[in-house]
Length: 416
Image (tube, rainbow, N blue to C red; front, side, top):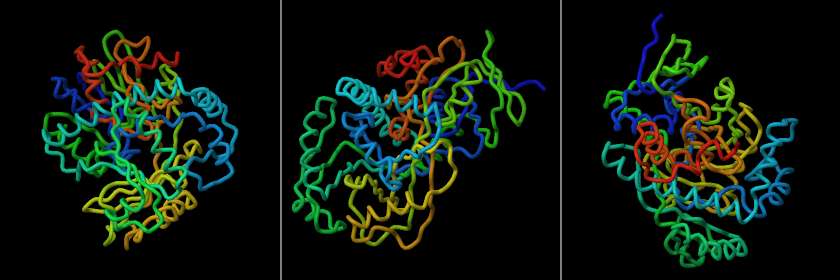
């Protein structure tokens, strides 16, 4: 059978793959997305949908190792490591721990800020240009604290974040409660990031797919990639639907990217970080904007179409169980803060694997020692937030054009 040939094959129909595909079509390339399940069914589906330049500081921060050790014995802690024998995970954790210092924290924050700020601006343009109907709202994000010491400490850190273009507003508890009736008494204070935004991620991904198809792109769902070869003439892909070929290929499989890359001798330092969310019908009394309940690390997002609690980070490999303890922790955390912490109807209980690198930066660029193979993976908890910038950066690199941001910090070579 003769393989269908396209200019670019995107392997993975999640938010990064679809954003890259759309940007490549705008650059004049013919694009085919190969998706093993349904487009948008991976980690971005149950994401909280916050668009967060404020999240530039990485998970690998000074003090995180000690905090993580304290949490290890607590199954419902915001960060949980399931005890098991996994040499790859322990090597990853050793590298992660080595980066929990001020110098590396600063380096990652600077590079994360660059891609997040570009993506935030670009996303507003994409929503308008492509008519993306995804409940996008540019209304900011609030961090809310009930613990005074934690609030005071974070308020002091906000000044340091201004260096990276992260603007914040500080509210004491009484002032904040006067403007936010959805919250119970006992708030010590809040930090607002006015430049953040929110959207409904499942609808955002569906709209990216629509915009791509309308411009001539092809998405093949239930098309599982079984093999991949890079040669002088391009790439050859074996799938359950038959062979496909292209001039270039992009691996954008999220947390599953390492398995395919490994068949080509490429090692991606990515571990699956399991996140959870619960989506409800909208309660009658909801917060006015998206918020993070910082003492419990629970994200609350409100849309016209629903209400979602999410977050947590669990390193348990590719465990497919829906952990009731982790889900209950979301509801308990929300109940400490909100008069109406859940909606009347549960629409979905969800988990997904976030592709975590130990420096909390994505891997974007050409695969080393491969002429026609590109990598777009490792976005951690911020795939939706970084999607527009990542897609545009990949399209510009593949097209040989000048890039809006420096691509060097995101190349795989930094790990070699």
